[in-house]
Length: 342
Image (cartoon, rainbow, N blue to C red):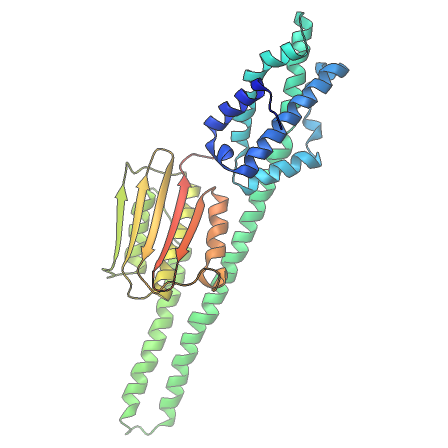
């Protein structure tokens, strides 16, 4: 498809402002289709005389516009970014559009501006609705996944540990008090029950994890001291100029990081691990790395390692989550969180 030079210039300007659109082939194609459609609609409105009406929000349920909004929501593209891109399009293309429709009088220029405005703006109510719906679904799914994981931990870890401890006690009750194995059995039962108690305490601390007034890295250090006391094989470092995140983003990010560290203790006990915070003006990238046994991606269901819930939470806050691992090569979890308020 040949793109007219004026439109190509506008698309290049938008791509420079939003590289994530230009770098993603699907989003880049969607941007071109949308912009082309907007301008085409503006021409139709002007030609039909409909350019005098610029109120178009009553079309907010247009299926095509909802589909576009859903696509951008899947890629965590906030509607505010699309609105800024639209402002850039309107500002840069209006003089071109006026020439294209040969508007000469003041009334014709006004009608042309209204037609272009209507063609551009008609997409946004649907996009905002689609984004909100996608966000609501992510939040709902994340909450359900969190409840499922808590239930699984209570059943697989806590209940199993309590049951095993009780079985040990039952065996002790069946043995002769003079039996020398009685003390060993009691000690084994105590270890199992203490382990179950530790699991309950860990779950409680995780559920009550809060960032509060701290920075994200400081909050993680505080919770690590509570969850993994005395773990001298876990180090947390910070580079760049550390700052703050919007509280709701910080809380979600903290939950993801604590889940990654809990996975390390469950599946790579005794491994050396590092948590590296790299702050920049636009993002904070947190890398959790251990030298444990690792796993083959795809061979272990994501639910086993809590990855599904972690990814859902990352999606809610517009972050990117990457998990890398291989047998014998350890595991790396990388969370990239945009620092903006949106």
